[in-house]
Length: 259
Image 1 (spheres, rainbow, N blue to C red):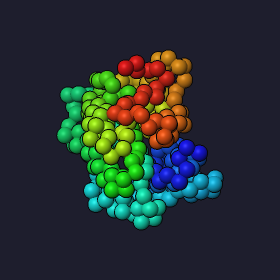
Image 2: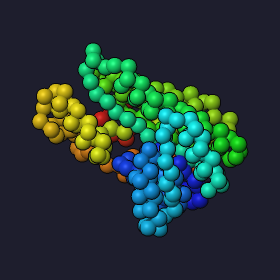
Image 3: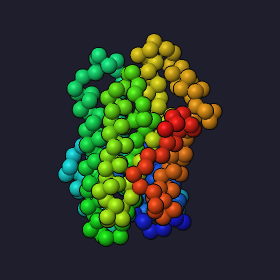
Image 4: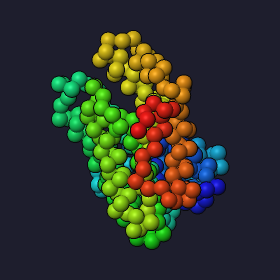
């Protein structure tokens, strides 16, 4: 078990990719702290992990509220004694033609995907630095952060910012023995992608399911990604196997974007 007794916070951990990450980290021996805007999802995921023999607990978290970020860190330290790993997974998506995108959409996406991620990273890093034993921070970027897309300029910009924040934070925190890396998932089979497919279908006047079919058809690996594919990469970056890796963004996309 590469993460035996490590304490790992996963934001947006209640469903989809976040749930798979929590399950994988617990299987590697970590205590998974399932932090989610939906407290019920967080508690259900934590209960499922414990039923399977792992260790976990769920906590509510809105990453757009600093008081909740600070409160989460305090609660985790009080209950588990420390923080060793942070996975910044919480994120939101929106889609609309470039000439129709408004400030409300940009604010919502950047409040969660950029500002929420940064201030969660900052709070966890402060605790890791105070502990004096290093740590691992992994941010969820996206293939959308590697290239522009006509209908999602706001989302692409937010994920490009995640890649940049990852690099800056890695350089700033190396003196504290804290590595900071990111994962750029491609198309992953989650409930979120059903929403994305519906938005693209409506915008492009296509049948439901057709945008997803076309996107998957273009993946060199020949299949859609699974949440477990992302979780496996995160477990590696969270472990000592990746101790000499920092400031990197790893594509987990079946070869869809070659950077």
